Figure 1 (cartoon, rainbow, N blue to C red):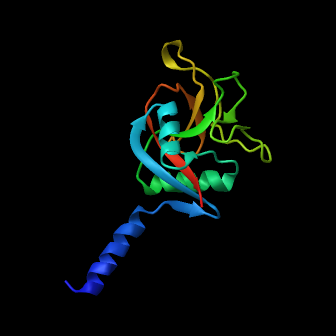
Figure 2: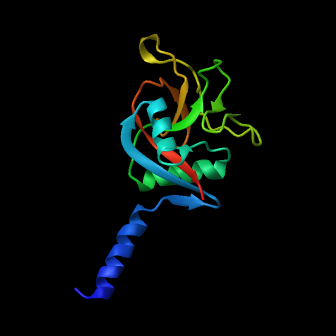
Length: 151
């Protein structure tokens, strides 16, 4: 194999593992199944934070990144109402959910705080219904997660 072919192969491998980005923000999907707070810490440990989409464009980009990674089912975002039921915040940014132009993307009937076995649902995920809509779930459940990075 000549040097040009090797270099091209390396560039292809690197490009396949790069995060999806928009403007000054990049997103990476992690298939490791973790409870909410462990996912939050994992993103911080990697230099980012658990994703917090504040616009429909950001949410669409996160959803496209999840689909590109071929992840199915629920995936953690950083929304939580653990401090005060019904008052959702982006934990990663410590700002109220919907702060920018009132944007939220909960599925119909969500959030409902109706976990099985009377377990409260205080953490937010995307993909539970097979779409980019949001759902509340128990923070102790293990799901893949999306990290957000500022460039």
